[in-house]
Image 1 (cartoon, helix red, strand yellow):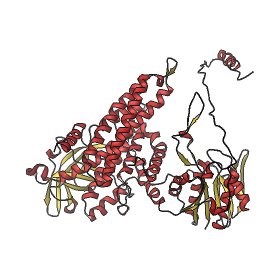
Image 2 (cartoon, helix red, strand yellow):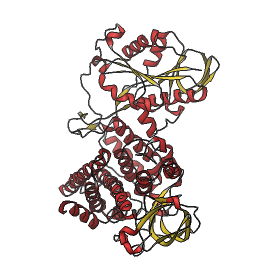
Image 3 (cartoon, rainbow over the protein chains, first blue to last red):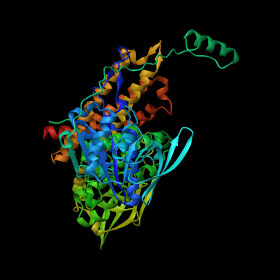
Image 4 (tube, chains in turn orange, yellow):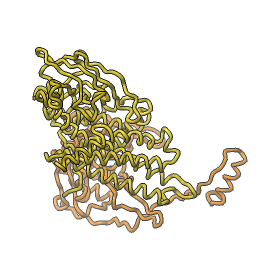
Length: 255
Length: 379
């Protein structure tokens, strides 16, 4: 019966980010947060595997103390307990730091057979935390996974690559990073939501880990990309092609 | 004072939003057009534990509060007001009187399947000659041995054709007027219960409304809800809670009108600029948003009062009155903002405007709400 750890990140909901068109500044004051999209697939896959094979599911997240509001959300999706590793300095972690923190917590504290992460986060999409964590724990890793099946002490996976599907088998313990088409995360029912608050949460601070965490990633500025629409209309006849080409030349799109 | 919802209520709102995006928005226009009951969506509401939100888990409910229930009705109605009222009638008008006035046996037998969504609930008070004047009803119930025999016709019954359990009001002693009315739990399979004419409505067309005909309809004596003569009181108290549900429904409709208006006015270009650049449109949207915020506070406050065990009759009437009139007024403005397009089937605001009107009528017209409010203030 697999003991599964699933990792998630609490990120800004990009749907709430507004752009001031004149200055291109992002307006973040009314922005909501959410569990990073692919991490929802990771949690769902862990819970499905538990439903099929038994075992346990633990959710783990690293973030600033404000990420506390993610816990009921994560737990309502099925894991039976959560590890909340938090410190004010965790607001802008680099993937290498996140992976080191996760590894420090998992090593010695948690027993596991499988770790499931999302392929990348909705904000940075660096795709590094999963593979780095596997490396630090010294376990095999498969990325781009869109199918997962447990078979005895091994896990069979399908990796969706640019030029085809790769089928591989990994000995447990192992780590996989999953793509969104692996499943459709279920919506938690109301009883699940209400029960989430009663599930155990283990708070772990920076001090408990004996780590220091210096902010190395400094955001110096963010500006929105803009798209200016010319609102040009063209007919669909042969003679209109010339007009399209002329317009593209005039705008400098083609030379 | 705290204006924040709990984390659970926020999570619930998010789930309902995702739910409606996935299951309701894609079909809402179509089921309105066809007047089709969305049985497949109602089944999913049960899977989400939304069919008995404010009732204890021992009766199959979710064990949450009335405010949570309002949030669900609001968000469902934002996508489809028909689904909002299906749930509201089921929860507030059919399940609540059993929860509040039922015996333990009645709760086990009837509340549990309602909360689990195995059966749909319906509330049969209105008659052709007894709308606002509910005590003028002519349906009778006569005790015959171990059974009551019900005779009469109820009409405009929401969920009538799809319900498994009906709360029926009938006169056990006509000479006593309102004090001679009693409430009964009538299962669909009771002999003599028939679904009559289906109504072809202007709005909320996916919710099913029909006559319920009781002809020598026999039910066991133990299906009397509360005591004989308590019916009118049960009906009025039930409607107090129902009004909070309708307020939430109206709120969802109004919010949808705002959502559509903001979106459309930013996209629609006339005279070389989006129409949202015009002050005339901006003011309509500002008024809309302000009234909706006020309606939301009134609605949530009424629900909060109910959750706190405080009196809520006046608060529920105020919420329903204001939210319903907000919905009617501003769905009309939303059509105005959409211009000719807003008058065409397929544009959501056309449906919203039709759906909004009923919220000023059912579960007590706006005039009745004013009577209730004034009655509370002037007694």
